[in-house]
Image (cartoon, rainbow, N blue to C red; front, top):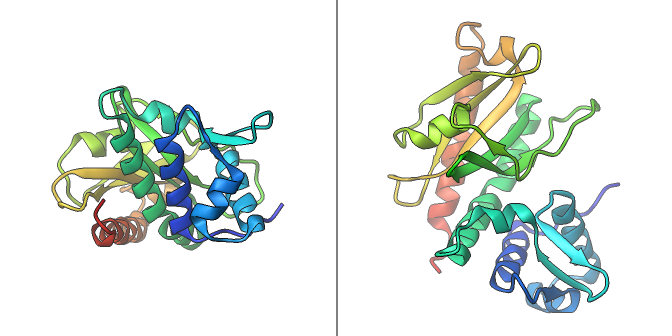
Length: 227
């Protein structure tokens, strides 16, 4: 079913509001008032976030709460700040990740550092009709390309990884934070090995597209109003 997407800023606002009230939750009416957009747009926005597991809806109380990927990302000491940072990165990446998937025909994913490696916070399906499974919230091991990017220097290098499936692979690069020194996230493509492999002769195009997108996301984070 097609849903009308609300502005990216609305997505970030929803996630921030929920992060501030993880236990009590936020009602549909409170969200509509805070966002200042039509009820139908709020409903479509929540449907998309629920599909990605980022929002949970309690039909009994009529309230929304953060989904498991948002809750588990942060530790107890700085939970709210880290959740908001995660939401900011995801919101800044959404339009660029959609465009990258359309240009490459591949899946586009965004991951942040996690004690066990890396955690996926956004997943754009490849634009085809083959079956796909949403991976948002999953943990990737330290050996994965995104985790290796996040564990290395904050530069524009690309890290390649052969996938578990036949002929599949991943290519990842860093999204620098606003200070340009620390990683905000790892952005990566998953697709055919013969296109992404450095030895295949075609990877340069995808490396350039990946780096350009990562720079755009980073610029969006730097331009965002300071909290």
